[in-house]
Amino acid sequence: MMPTDMPLQLLMLEGDGISHEIMTVARQSLDVVNQAYSLNLNIESEAVGLESIAQFGTAITDEAIERARMADGVVLGPVSTYDYPPAEVGGINPSAVLRIALNLYANIRPSEIRQGVNSVARELDLVVVRENTEGFYADRNMAVGSGEFQPSDDMALAVRKITRQACRRIALTAFKLARQRRRLVTMVHKANVLKLTDGLFVNEVREVSKAYPDIALNEMIIDAMAAKLVLRPEAFDVIVTTNMYGDILSDEAAALSGGLGLAGALNVGDEHAMAQAVHGSAPDIAGQGIANPSSILLSCAMLLDWLSHRKQQPALGKAAVAINRAVNAALANRACHTPDLGGSASTLSFASAVLDALHVEVP
Image (cartoon, rainbow, N blue to C red; front, side):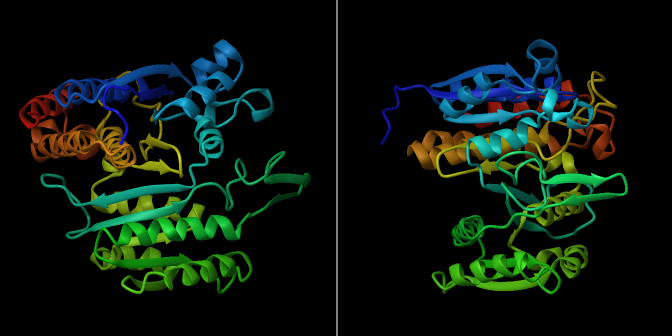
């Protein structure tokens, strides 16, 4: 067990758009639980994204990457990659860079129904386990250069990368998680068309499943899955899939539960973890003080829970529970709902409700 007198290093990387507004709320909440539960967190901040490009000529510096590598946990704010210059002149995606640099191969995205929030689904409690480091995503599937290229004016190509190692480790992540939940894994693929790449994924998941005879494994084609998730979301527990399918399905699940603003996420590897809101930087509302900070708060709670198990410090897990309950308490009060939830509350008023609830939760 790690001595509790050794501080844990958390690095908060502030991005673009609404990042400053929601990261401020996250920092305030972390400060409360840090003191209340004697977590001994040393929390530092650094800018990435447009501010970093303006100052250093790159969206994330080598120094910031190294600081993230040395930290016990990272919190990444939303970034406006659409507004960045080309990668060769510094407009790299901080999220993709960190996922590769820290080997964060699993993107864990839970969705559930929360009291007080209008939702499309009446019953939903699932987790999407998304492979995070390859697939069709051009910024993370090549050692040198991009996986997307244009040989002529009239043709553009994209390379899809699927490896046995990545398939196996994301499958292991899903089955281990399912053992803590309702013991059902649904594998999603398109092996009827992508017979080699998705075929490799399917074979590896099936192979891993042999070591988990207590876990049921279902298989679904991606297009059928997209439909069934709308029609019967209660049928799913843990969904495991490749990068792009997982990105889409997790957003769909979040929308069914009430919106992307409610979706927490944790990027996990064997040695590192990074909390990250599922939604984007929302530049259209940046600076208006109406952003919903729920997603980043729930992501921070997931990070604390991961650290609790990794460092064998139960207080971190208690702090994670307290943040979750505080967010749920604020969401249960419709007067606290921000515009994305159909209300008129501000980020500040939502944050105040969360902090008030936190002070009730803490010992």
